[in-house]
Image 1 (cartoon, rainbow over the protein chains, first blue to last red):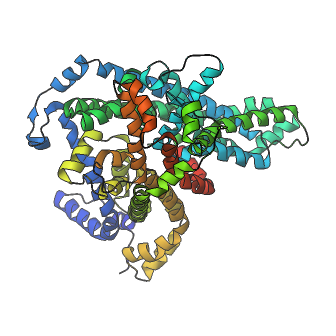
Image 2: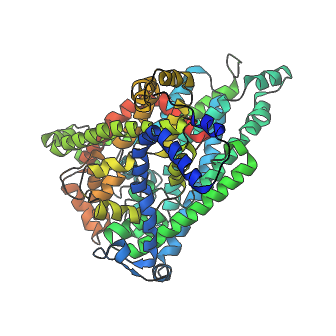
Image 3: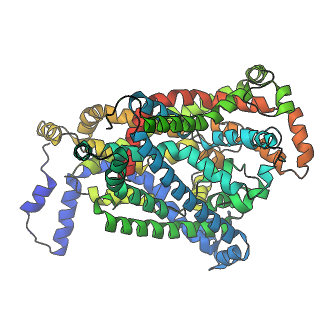
Length: 325
Length: 296
């Protein structure tokens, strides 16, 4: 069966668009495209069940959920869940932590990755590979294992951090039971885990810059530092801005693995480690407080969509080709 | 790019800085390995050290004495990785191919339909209720496989590759009377082997390191993948630190199984092999990263 190109057939039939006609035309199109549609169908159904049906479940934020009554049978309660949520101190705390930490991760990550990419670009030959591999190692392990490694440093009795404090005659800390240290520990771990990845992104951007610029600059007697400032950085600027803005767009999505396994999910450090994602997980699976979890989840999904759309809008303004859509 | 050869103070500084940095990044791994090789006595007396007083293979001996949980963990993880990767590759290719065909009438709406899920989702609560109440997947191996089957990110990479396949091949197959399904399975898939290999690597990496769904949906002892096994061992530390009797409990921890060195030995046996294997494929990860970060 030789199929004709559907776009060609659309062109062949000029706009006779009375209603039943259009309906029939669409049906012919459907028949012509049915095989490709069949191929896409499993994926479409999959997303329907796994992604779209749960979106309907967002209405749970306005219901009092009971397992025996199901999503649709449960009673509507208006904004009660939100009221309850914001009466407790938790809501303020987890939103502050999520936004605060993500902002720090983005700032630190961007600055460090940019710096390292620039340095890496000044290195010759084989060494680059070795540096890359070393920086990339943490990328390959799960956050569960990161939790173990963090524990090697933070264990109250045997941890290496306390050993190091001992060298200076300082008192050992009970890190997992304290709050302040986490403001520093979490960004350090985040940076350690992600630096290889983000450095490579910028490094790839740099190697994509045409060598002609550098050759011309060298002929004019430019130094390497000058080339870095006047060529590499300006040409890298769009990429930096785009990744930065996209990072901000995702600022409501916390890093569950980092905030769950590294502080080891220990109550006393929640004030400075608990984020929206860990809170929802705990409310849902440990405390059985589905209503608060649903309310926060609703906020996260909706506000998250708004921030991503805003970020994309700004990226479009900066550089149209780099926008997601 | 820089061509200057010979000794250069700036180069030397950069290399010293990078070397120190890389050592700092790699040392935590070394510490964990050394802890697992330290005798329990040394650990209790001196804490964790890079150069322990007394080396010992005791921790590994203890783990291998009762290897059941570890072996089971490897079997479960290997199973979900293999099944998940194969199913995911097929589903990804089947979804990416139609939307890569410019002459497919529904390519734009379907593309939007798939990628919209990257921007907006129902969040954990509805997903959890769907999986446990409606699909009844609590404690099922499928709960570890299904959620990761089809990621828009992978579709994007696959589509990027398919876009480069010449349309003439498809056209001439059609002229010869081949149906779309046949074109896909006997022409497109074989041609996509390089892309499928790279994607397969990402996907298997994802399944191997998967812990989130295991944490959510597995609460009995039947199927415990490696990562969840590690979570459970780690949470014993949580229990001890959380206890109101933390002081006493901390001391007890040394007397109880699993001991400090055994804990780290488990972490190494469960996580180590992949840490040795994955870096060999670093090249492909880098490729995927650059594709992904520039468009997505």
